[in-house]
Length: 463
Image (cartoon, rainbow, N blue to C red):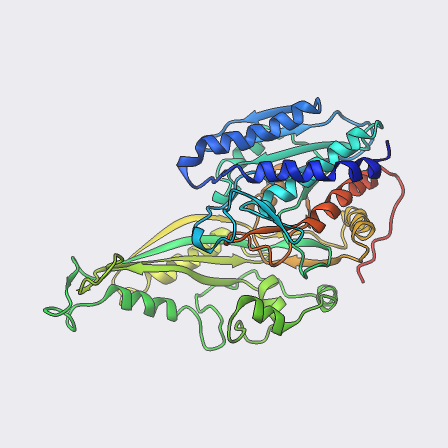
């Protein structure tokens, strides 16, 4: 059977299966969902077993990963597709229009936690593989799937699995669909990711909380001091003041500026989507340069003192703040974290500083004009045929730390082909996945696999 005919007949079933998957509350951060994590992993195993594919569950100290592979195809590339079955917590339930784990279809969108990040995007590749298997023809290439359960908590155990199973994971290329398009409705290939450094700073200014009436005005206030620390991180040009923070940052070359200039961008729409009164950022750079080419440092949370209902009139002795730095090529996690640590620990005027490292991941950059450009060409052709538009080729501001580890531990480069939309509300209430992207994504995946198995060379036009 022609693969397009099969897909036309089975799209509804593929959506039903996705709804079933999204209904599993596989929240990796919550120990109470350990059984749900196992259930989501086994859901993929049953799918693979039903197609007669080889699958293995790889246990870890946390949540398991799943490995699936098709038979080898002689003299053809091997593609490793990565995704994750774990999802973010679904807090603020009152802000959801539908219950997060009771997925609903409305206005050709699937609402539910994980619908876009990442269950919908990894499942569409599974659906594409099933479609090709059902055509009755041999697969054009060998495909390996690595689906993990700890992406949303920083993939702490995946590097060890990569090392342990390096031979099994051998491939020519990695494909990751865990991003969104740069512009809504326009297919996008990303060739770079920012890295990340996450840390906390805890501050103590006195031995105990004290009465704000008896001791107020004489005892240092930890929250006030922490606010001062945060406010001093950037200068009047919104540059990070930490010595060495910008070491290694690569300039934007002319070819990348040309690619960037081709991205349709409406600052007013962007600002309206955020819901802010003005756009801010490092002076001397455009909005897209700031979010794709420049490093940043943000305070993600701050607290201290009394947090309960009502009032408690104290002067707090302790405060804390959470931070994340976004890195760009060629910054390193170790250097940026060390620079931040040294700066905070030098602020002895504020009180006793306790700098606590969390996790991090390096930035990733694939030369879009280098030896692997042929894979981008084939990916671009598959996107153009499925979406009817020439795809954008741009950097991405987010971080997927494991992508850099595919490069360092397995020696593999990654093509980033995301099918999410910028307004999919991932990590937020009312997460959704555009079903038009789901349908086109399956077709793109089929075409990409076929293109990799073909000797014909397609020219990839980026403009």
